[in-house]
Image 1 (spheres, one colour):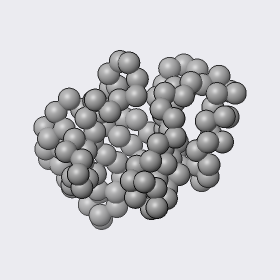
Image 2 (spheres, helix red, strand yellow):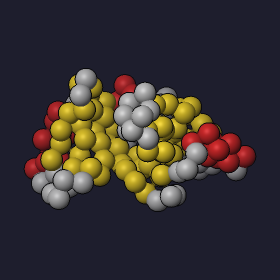
Image 3 (cartoon, rainbow, N blue to C red):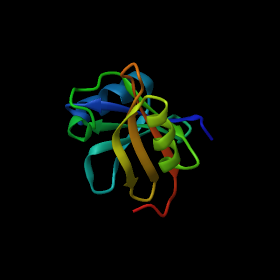
Length: 124
């Protein structure tokens, strides 16, 4: 646990971003079922390494540029408590990503966005 597990690229035009990253890095991007503005990013060996998501899902009040990183944790609720006690701010409370897991998003004391995720295929 507590390892970098995933990154997210925020985009105003997810289809354009999908085409760009597929061309540049030979990544394969596939749509999440029922989610038009989300694409899974898989490396050449088929491992899911990230996602492209529409900006309307941004938990912050300003647009995010750069890659948002997710760290695996054992307990998202406990991570929320520790982040806040350490001076961070919760932007998105524990939320289910259906059939993927539970995620929460934060700002560290310097304003850097990051997420904590607990993988759980039964999350809904």
